[in-house]
Image (cartoon, rainbow, N blue to C red):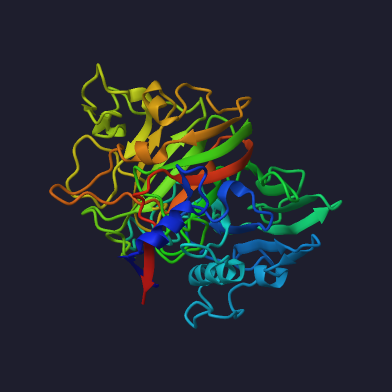
Length: 495
């Protein structure tokens, strides 16, 4: 696989000033995304599907090809849509060549999907300052794991098969890829743009039985307003753990959870503490008590010594912070469950409150905290994150609505932003993420917290009955809040 390295480019004062002015909302903000607020008529959106450990494994959905696709087009002055990706390209799968495909990826489903995403990115690329961008990413993931397959590594290390039981799996084939159906965006009645992706993981299932389903529909009035993305996700008996997100990923380098070059919408990578996220979210159906609905989920990658990730899955660690707004999600962190709490909480005025300070620690603000499985200097008690669901070790800081987050604009009480409470949020994600606890080896230089993925959506976590979640998302933007933001910082690939 390709490896990546981080380089800093130096811009002149005049170029820097121009970059700061570009895409600004007033004089205070600069947008980090290629399509600020989702208002560009010429849409760029792509699709990716994964199995449990963020790989493909096998292309088992008949006629679907590799689970990567894109809908990218420009609109001409006479309102004609010029599509950049054909359906023939969207259906490309293992064994079918395309420009730039390496020989080793031709028959490897995992590598093929990675290189297909890069190819789709080249077709959809929009030239911009300070660098090109590609598409919003619809991410779909199946939580089934066939432990007898030995497919998923443990904290980045290859391990032999083991007895089933820890993860859902109905038997051989439970990690299959879904069907993918696509309606390329069309202009209806000369006024409304509309397209969609949908499908199911239940291959060959009848419509009358229990069947998983996902759908993302995008709509916009031509020449005005912004795109509205409508999402639907339904679990089934065979697929009780499903995830569906809309992501703004890095345009080059590692996005959160991956160990290879990706393509996305973040033309400038936001760094704590200097950025906010603006988004309108309307939750129609919550997806039941097991739906860990993320108002926002941010992801990045750095090693335990604070250095940037370089593609070595044994030492890289994916870091996530997630705000869960489902009011049925409990705080596992408690005075009697200290292993589910970060070692300390940092207040907006930078005071540390340790988790054994039962009078002052905000236990209700944390659903769950878990440490990376490759950390060597852990503070007991602790809970280790699932070692199989990412290609490398991971660390999670999962938050719940609580008054302690008020200063950052986050939800302060259960029910905020939930069904019946549609809102446009402006979240100080940079400020909050700069004060969250993340593990690091003692005596090492603090990592730069530069976020390569920002997304929203739900993870319906092993439901015991069929559940349905529905929501719309619009106005998505990532806003740099300081002229000190490093516009030059980007992950760069080296061979």
